[in-house]
Image (cartoon, rainbow, N blue to C red; front, side, top):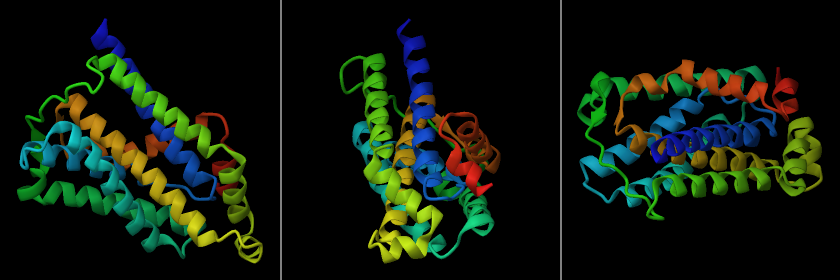
Length: 231
């Protein structure tokens, strides 16, 4: 029962994180077609730190967050001047490049064979299922914050008219950076959870196909006006 509850709750955590990442980006009028690559960055960070660096699994999981911040910042710097279809294609290209690195950097990532023997992460709360529920609650709290008027209205103003948002002093560059960094941090953290749950990862789990699945999941969930506006 505990194992089933843990798996179901982890699935819900990943779904909530995917919703958070999709919503944070779509509110800004952007379609993220490289979400799986960000999850992969978090998964490989946790796997490498816990196996080769022999870091405590809890610390390795926490390390995925600053890695997500860094990756999100780099991603924002790379696509900050793009919009619409060009932005979607750019994130798609990032996903392809990251997957290529995972596949070909054999000395670091293990190549197509991936990384096995990831240690089991002991529950912080002492109970695996309760641990997963705590993570789910934290992600739902992030979702609630992302739906607050302060965040949503500023992001939608940027999506609808960036020049007007700039004239109103809404700082569109900072808002866009917040969207990319926050969504990347959440997705990287989910990648860490994914790695410790399966205890084995390989590049096939982080392909463009998986990114499209995440995007499709956001399309069938409520509050999809942002993505529809982009399409």
